Image 1 (cartoon, rainbow, N blue to C red):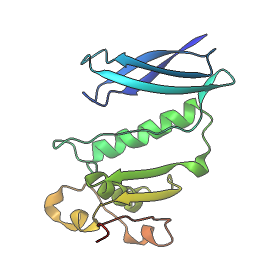
Image 2 (tube, one colour; image 1 turned 90 degrees about the vertical axis):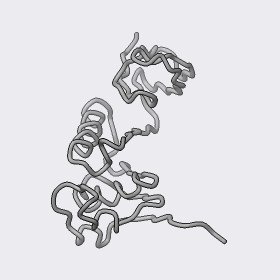
Image 3 (cartoon, rainbow, N blue to C red; image 1 turned 180 degrees about the vertical axis):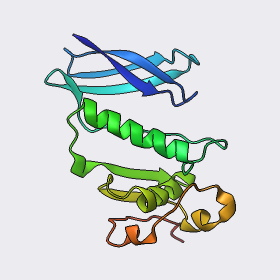
Length: 159
């Protein structure tokens, strides 16, 4: 048995797919992206005939589409919704993290979409970026959503 696994290429950011053998428990392989031909390393675990185990959804931003743009937020929410519909996901274990602008995006998600995430890990993100009107952050943000939010914030370096 085989299944098509749809993914976002980390090089060109285009959606593509790869065939996964559901009879093999653990698969490690490199496959070239069907769009840009760059190599992508896969490490896939199959449980009871389904792709399983812990998973990470990696979502990229570009200068033209920052983490906190409404279309990027919609893409992330759609990706999580699709995964929840397709796989048996423990909804109490859906976390969000990001580095730099991605860390700022984590704050943005906490302010805009707090009910989806179990906890937040912004790495070197800044709430001040979202406060700046020139940042392009879309829509209203609600500071009270951070009250009692499980945040683990990492900023700066040890000297």
